[in-house]
Length: 319
Image 1 (cartoon, rainbow, N blue to C red):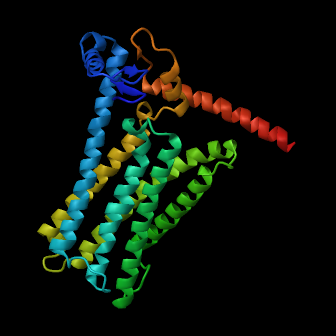
Image 2 (cartoon, helix red, strand yellow; image 1 turned 60 degrees about the vertical axis):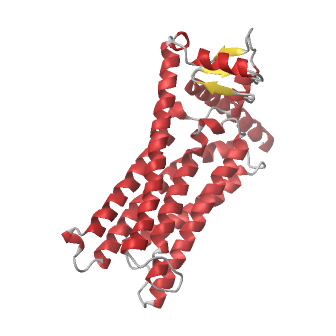
Image 3 (cartoon, rainbow, N blue to C red; image 1 turned 180 degrees about the vertical axis):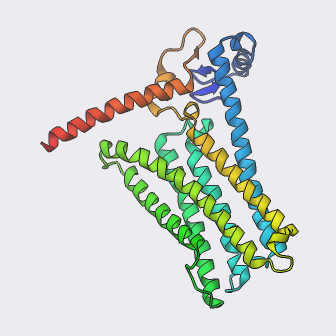
């Protein structure tokens, strides 16, 4: 049975489909030439195809980057261990890429996945927070691995620009999580949430891009220090391999930021989804509704008016 609200292209079902015949009729209608004759609806389906293409590319870039970093430390380097040696240090790039970059990127776009729009916004916020928390834990363990290795090898800590920027990113990321938890609390005034949200989004994307940049600095620094015969400048196979990994990380970051900044791919508000679900069904309980971007824009406008009203009410109570 298809559940309450389901969109195929531009067609929105306003009630569950219980029988195979109903499902076949709806699917045939959704993909028939007649149903695609309207330009705006066709554009919406094309936008959805573009979203899936960019999402698939982002997933491929991210997963292949993780495979590359594992191949790097297991084949070209000393493997993985937790003994104060180089094997422990190698946890740093593995956890940075798989956690601080990949999981953080997934957290950024989790609201944009159309198949999650049936979940409440609160549930998605907890998933978003959980992914960010997992990314923070991975990053913290990777820092511990570096400090342990440096202390065991009598190497000074925090002497390079890479280490300065990396620690700054970790501290700011922790602050971002703490403020986000406060933002989730039901007792937080609506006006505060409205003011905090743009900052949360801006700093989240900025930190994500910064972490990728710092990772590129780190892997380049490691190659310069770690390759002696032949040297990094001679482009040995390891250097070429890791350079390709760096390109994959950049591509992953670009794809994630592209998905997260497209207005037409934004999640409609729960109010918009509920209104679309309950606003009449017609004879066949099938409705050709507005585009998702229109729903999102309308919901945002309603939300801003509502926040202003609640803000005025709070001001009146304070007076």
